[in-house]
Length: 107
Length: 131
Image: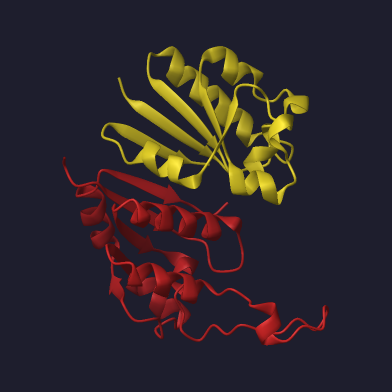
């Protein structure tokens, strides 16, 4: 089993590319790998519960983290987050990617 | 425990994208955790440590240079280099194309071969491309 960390920096409302990342992450998870999606920059706009953008990733069992600074910059409060999203420090991302047998993919 | 090492490849020029800020935050967090970090700066990212960068006043707000406290990427990188355990290599061809030779102390010149060596010797490598 390999660990995959997808770092999503793009606005989900701007283009269809984040959907490609979602499909890739789910496909990797379905093949038995451990998958984390770390939302950063405009990627955190998907973290709000009201957008319902992360439902498929949640159902697939993907771990969802959101960068706290990116959330604060965009005025997104913790209580607005989807329940499956955990507010995280950038250091958590470092901990995630600096492990053996881990693939870190920036998008 | 095996020593952990992280390599980043950066491509965005300064003041263009939030990618640069996030990359510097990742580097800072890794160094604070005692992790060795290599950076290979490619394309516009070779301008991140340019010594000629200067903070500026903000005529729209009417603030002075001092009041504005404008952050520069060269200052961030100098601070990160001062923490130790950071190796920063600028791509030589990219530097020559841009005339970006006047960089802060501690920044090295190299080639994609250095990036390959860094990645080969690291626990992991993160490539942050331009959009």
